[in-house]
Image (cartoon, rainbow, N blue to C red; front, top):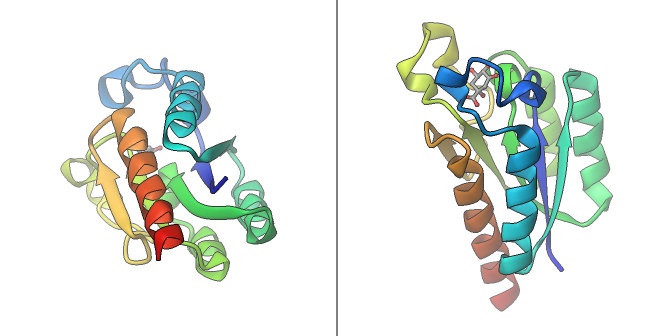
Amino acid sequence: MPQILVLHGPNLNLLGTREPDIYGRTTLADIDRGLHELGAELGVDVVCFQSNHEGELIERVHAARDDGTGFVVINPAAYTHTSVALRDALAALGRPFVEVHLSNVHRREAFRQHSYFSDLAEAVISGCGAAGYRYALSFAAEKLAQETRI
Ligand code: DQA
């Protein structure tokens, strides 16, 4: 079964209680559970990983080079705006990815307007709340299904 790796960056473990007016009340566990259920419907394996540490996220991307990952869904959180190293890891992985943000980063502070990931991403979803992850997973599953049909 095709495998999709879902990566969550720093502070996303606090979802549900972290600035709920911006990020909503859905917890990370709720998001991951919903993605596993949707993955089962779509016929893809979903693997979720969250870390508050840049190096751990980078090492998880390295591991994806030979663990069967076909597509990545990533919310790099604050690393979106700072991490050349995580960007380089995804570039080295060479698999397509969707960049997800719960909030609409373009409506927020100027420092959130720049992403080190968007120009490498297949797609960017920003401002749809937790549903953005589901849209990203559906898109990724469709892309993987197209690849196997070709
Ligand atoms: C975020 C937006 C980032 O600017 C912020 O640092 C986050 C979450 C989002 O999902 O809206 O931690 O990626």
